[in-house]
Length: 70
Image (cartoon, rainbow, N blue to C red):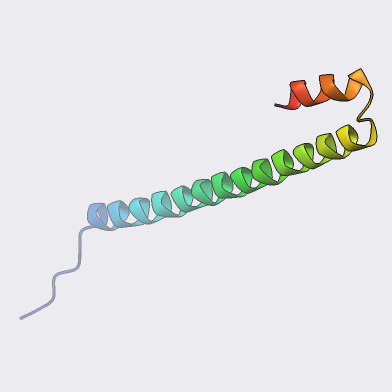
């Protein structure tokens, strides 16, 4: 009994699927990176806004900044 080699079409399909999976993983990784950056950025903006409101508690500008951030 001899082992039949897989057809080149079948191999191409396997290679294409493998490449698609790699690309998909890259895209998923990028979206994870992006969401973590967005999360960090939002937290940073909130902290800065909070610090500004603490420093200028009596001013109307601080109240406006807080309203914009929320």
